[in-house]
Structures are given as C-alpha cells and as structure tokens.
Length: 92
Image 1 (tube, rainbow, N blue to C red):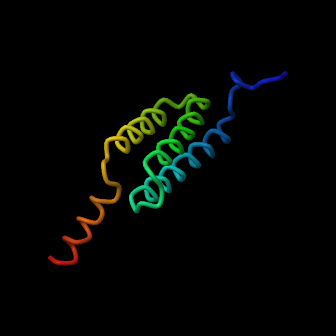
Image 2 (cartoon, rainbow, N blue to C red):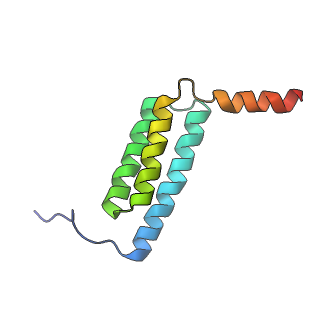
C-alpha cells in the first residue's frame, strides 16, 4: 500500500491549500458567530483544517488554528459579542 504521509507539497499547492484553510476558517467562524453551527461542529471543522495545515508543515497556520479552537472552546454563548456591538450601534 503506497502512502504519501511524508511527501513534500509543491509551493503552488501549498499556497492554494493555505488559501483554502483561511477561507474555510472565516466561514466556520462566521457560522459559529451567528449560531448556524454548534461549538462542537466548529471545533471539529477547525480540527480538520489543523490536520491539513500539519500535513503542510505550516507552523504559523497551525498556531493560528489552535488559538482559534481554544477561543471557540472558551466562548459560552456564540454570537453574543456581535449582537451587543450591533445593539450599541443602533441605539447610539
């Protein structure tokens, strides 16, 4: 059985993969903020992106994703800061 666990990724593919990770991370955070996905689903999706980043061996991206996962796990009510900000803007 031929596996590609330790193969290198070309720079073009790595650039596209990092773009994909960034775009998906933004979508996941938005969906979590508006309550469209649960905390567990958001953490699971971000963990999948973390696995992709680890295969790319991109430490900065891995740190960013891990910090995002930690932040989401510590948030008790998704979307609350966004609603508070919107209410302050409407009534100011």
